[in-house]
Image (cartoon, rainbow, N blue to C red; front, top):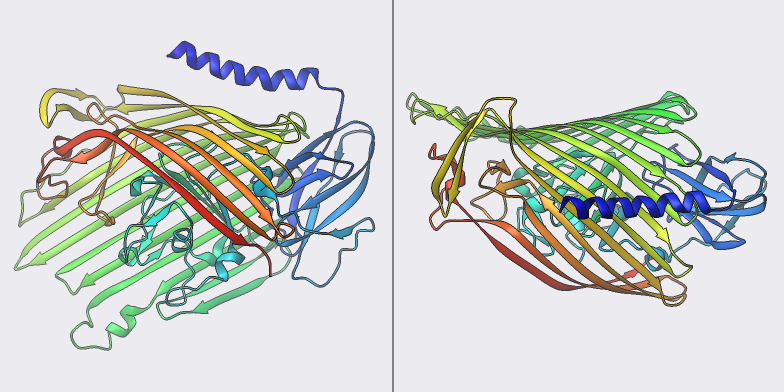
Length: 618
């Protein structure tokens, strides 16, 4: 297994390097692309050459692009949905840096760059991209949808897409292509969010006023993503307006919100602070029966960035959110997330871009009961320290390579009870170390064929500090105590990924793909819709990593000059080591027994057909 893994990784690297070595001598045209109005970096912008449309590149998630061109004169066309496209004449005699600011379509003023000409927006990205099962939503799109109680909600919006199913009314949990709730990786500025709901699931933790971009990938994710079987929900916060100060907010039936953003140093650094809070508890105080009750949640999003120089920029972002529910002095519960991301973007060369991230994530809940001098308390925590290093390497016009590593130190404190009314059973935290190496190449094989392929090597190590039992059909067959700091069981899995797109003609294309995903964190719940007190556990001596293999095929067709599109996709997903519970299993907090003794493991499968039709203008 290790030999075959090495061969696959070596082959991928060899293809990339051979392209760089044997290609003709070219010069680089590179830079960053921003929103002219507020200085926000734009994601996924298409940059192409008018003289040869097959020479094109997509800016990465940090707005950086790079083209390779021989000496000569060219017309560069840059386009992005929601913005006016422009074309600019350039003369390439050496490496050229070309930073671009795009004008929003809603603005009436025209650009003052002499060579700029407004052209039609590119709307056929669905026909040219090899990525499958991916939907990207702009905040402008989310703004146009009907909302509940005046609250725009990212989680409810994605549930309108095919293949994504709500877990029920009053729940923000969702399942993708037959997967469980915990099989969705939810990221906010690269930090994992373990419970993305407020008010027991009626609202999500994401305040749309603070967000820039939302994308969801259903199973066929590129190799830079990992750790979950079913999907990746990647949410990115706004960077903050670096040109002008801006204040906006809103008053809803449930909550009110306020956002402030502006430059710290004009066009060099900026900030955004966005807060939201409900006020049902204010009205409860006006009643006689519930004046001592608590019922509210709050969110606080913060982000700042600073441009060190032309090639280096620092970002610091954070999220703080909590729900509080209480009935006088007899019952109270609260739960919430805390995340923080420190990110360093660096343009190492005209072809190589680096992103280094230090990430902290914490989710915890507390429950307290008090009656007749008896007390009961329950608490649990999952905490991550995460280091990510990502590189984007624009090898040439045919290859766009991403590679890097990720290292996460998990601390999971299971549900621990204490009090006078029950026997206390404090539990030791369990530690684990999750690592991954990945490489991914977006390869334009021909004018019609695009292939996105790569591999991720995932490693998960159980660390000491507790006693680990081994069970078979619920019966203990072994036990081992690991001292803190010692390595225990280690799981290693290779995850190959490949998708391909073949453009049949100007209006249609076909796609196909295969991917393997593994998951080492598992959510145990007595409820299908999810509760704040559900328990997270890691892979152990008994609990093995979950594995999913998915194959899919799709067809896309556009109509009426790309103003309408229809996409169809079929998939089959086979899953291993799926967690189930013994009959009558109790996985909550009523006993001090090892929860792993209540678990069973099996196989699963999911298959389906997804259809979506879009009208993209008017």
